[in-house]
Image (cartoon, rainbow, N blue to C red; front, side, top):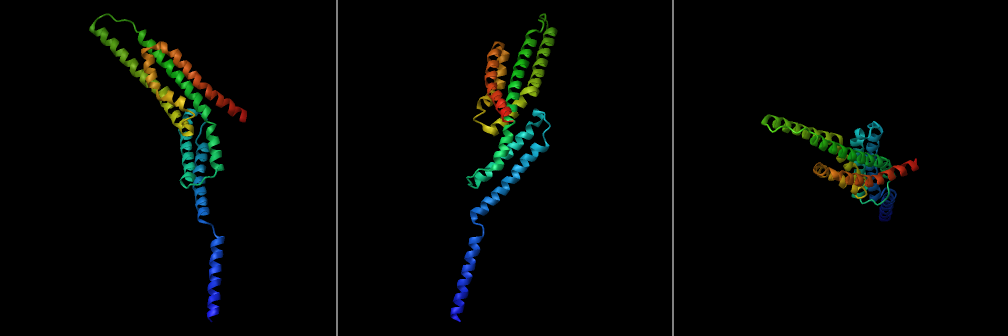
Length: 229
């Protein structure tokens, strides 16, 4: 009887050992869960890019940035889980997002040029205002016109350029904050630069040359992308 109990006990132990050996390990479970969580985020980002874009870059930029933000969160899933393997899903999504980099950079260059032109035009409008006779009423009229032009310039420069430039900077920072540092720095300083141009319009040419120099980087990105396709 005792021998039978011992044999039964050993058989049970072997069965348990085999069950443990055949089942998934803790690291396998962890990897599986991370893959599922990451795949859900990747699918969400791809769905946005598939269904929300209109083909007009500035209209699409917020959706592209949101998809890029989700891609960063998807990468963090493996990082937080301390999983050091390459994810094909993430690689494919990042390659897809990279196709928008040259568009973002070149649009930023275009908007920076537009901001310079708008500022130079504003300065010229102020300078071209006819001199008023020295009387209280005419001075009041002149001051009112200057105030109107200043307010209109502020509205125009924000709507045409600055708001979009800041959105582009956010997107490029998500893609690679170091690679796009020069352009993002220029965007961060654009309002200070435009203020300087109002005081010193002769600086416009120098600033335009700096814009063009940075723009060469994004023309290169565009040509590389064209070669791939």
